[in-house]
Length: 323
Image (cartoon, rainbow, N blue to C red; front, side, top):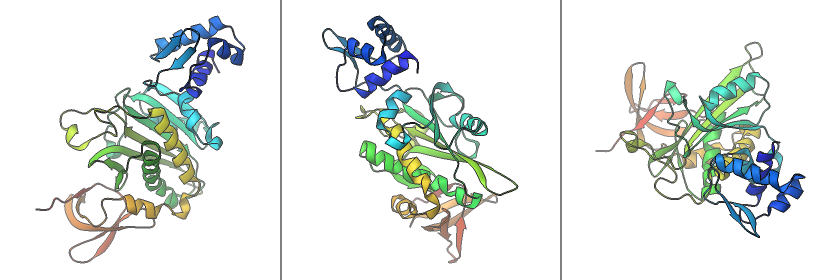
């Protein structure tokens, strides 16, 4: 690990305390001058580091730059050595994750970026990804299952994100089928899953699960009507690194046994769609129905006015406004 990253790791592990240059130098077996140069290099990258005579260095609590060194201290012990790659700027974390998956990047690898220039949403939409305010991450998962089970990973990811936000932030979020997370009636997270399947065996070789969270993103124009953030207009009590780590913990935990579907009850409890009158677009026609349940495969069970029951597996739904 380069010296700069080693120094950052020590500062992240000691965020609540000052740590002397002498102690850092001794731990890394380098000179105090080398430590000072590493501190300056970090400051040039945007890190705010307090330096006090006879006390040493301390990473400011206001620092909110994403880094592997800032994420790792909050990971469960069995995930601390996972492959975590952080970019300042990238086209799309999902696209990069798919390339890494083809290069045999292992299960549990995570691609993260400060900003995306070509962030991807569902149905070919773009995902607004400004720097310094959001969380843009993609998992490489190798679930060793067939495609019929792999589709559940999107449903599982929604539960994992809700768990992570509750654990790290103390905030209660809701799920809109299929894969959007809402807070205070506005969308704060989107999830996009893309799978690669072996045509001969029917087994899934890898699934890339992309998660975009509006952490403290400010919106303007039409987006203000539908998009929100966890901490819009207020100072977050935690860093993005802390929430990212908890998303990793929860996502990797839930991916280990997702085929048993134990998370589905939690998905239903967090859903604000079940019991609602909805409309959805299919075959160039708008359909009215009532959302009545979530199927074992993650599909949305709807009932028409004719009492006919059907299960939706994809698409967009809108909750009908009451007169």
